[in-house]
Every structure is written in C-alpha cells, then in structure tokens.
Image (tube, rainbow, N blue to C red):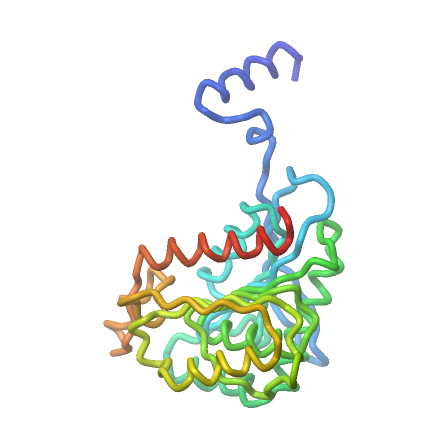
Length: 267
C-alpha cells in the first residue's frame, strides 16, 4: 500500500474514533490438540497479534457442559484484553454434553479424581506456557460453574499467579495446609445460587484464610447459578434447572475479573 493511501486509511479510522493500531489489530484463534496420557484433548487458543512481545497467559475452564462456544467466547474476550487465552478441554476429545445427566457424569469423572483433574489441567497449562506470545511466569485461570471448581482446586495445588471463579463450586477435594496458597483468589458468586450454601461459603473462607490466600469473595444479590451465561434461561426452561442469566452481574463480574488480573499482572 502506498504511503498516501495508508495515511488516508488511518485518517479515516481516526475520524470514526479509532486508532491506527486498532486498524492493524487482529484477533487470532485456532483449535489445538494436546495430550494427557493416551487421551487427545481439544483446546482453543485466542490472542491478539497486534500486542507486542510476550504477555500473561490465561486458562479458561468450561462449565459442566464441556468446551462449547460459550467457553470459546470467553477466551476471545480475554484475548481482546491483551492476554493469550487457552480454553481447555477437561473431558477429552472435545466432548460436550447435551443433557444435564451427561454433563453430571462427565463432571463427576473429573471432580472425584483429583489426580485426573490435575493431569488434564497441567497438560493445558504446559501447552499455554509454550506459546510464543506467553510469559510463562505470568499465568492465571478463570472458570465457570464446574470450571470454577477446577480452578479453585488447582490454585490450592500451586503453580498459578491467580484465579477467578464465576458461580463455581467451593468444595475442596484436597484442602491445602497452613500457608499453602500463594496465589490470589477471586470468587464471584450469585447471592441467590441455591447450589452454594452459607455453610459452604463459611468453610471456604475459613480454608482460604488458613491457607494464607489473598482472596476476595463477592456475592451478587439476586443472581442465580450460571448468571454469566446468556443461555442459562433456555437451559433452565428446557431441563427444569434453577439457572438464570443476569446481565448486570455478568457485566460487573467481568469488570471485577479484568481489574483483578490487571492489578495482579501490572498491565
């Protein structure tokens, strides 16, 4: 492109309120295969190739449905914030449930086996660390529902700078010892989530305090389980589940998460 034409293009973009760098920004995505033992896992990478150099990496752990378009969307949203994001596959083979019965079975296979959970999460973590755009010393993770439980259990095992859980289970498969959590933890919970009891919240906060974690627990008043998922209402109607999308809580929790990692990684 000739210099004059490039100048005109940039001036036109500026007239629309953009910047020359925005014109060159390009969100990149690709499906990636990786292995956990003999199982092929199907991941999804997203990054902005206009961001210079290495940047923090973020793992996105899906809801109990599996690695679906919702998890991919969240990975792209993180890439738009300047991270390299990997939406992970915790079930293997890119398996996605179409019914709560199947979702429950898939999730239980992982949550009832900490060694399997750790192996599959670690396989994704190692893949993310090897990406040329990622600073392997700055890795975080976010998770939704089942994925929230996964990232909270993984931060208890170490190896992450910080995690954020959206409407995730709080139960600990293997509680950490005194001072055992070095990372920062953000939990965003629906105040009307019937799957999370006050007793569970109390036990979790006591556990985090004992483990020495820098943590914050936020309740969004009136928000039900799956409050970040725009499809929650259709799932509720189709399967008789106590779920509901809450646009305000979705927006507020995403902003809270964005601020949390921006402060953590200094970006």
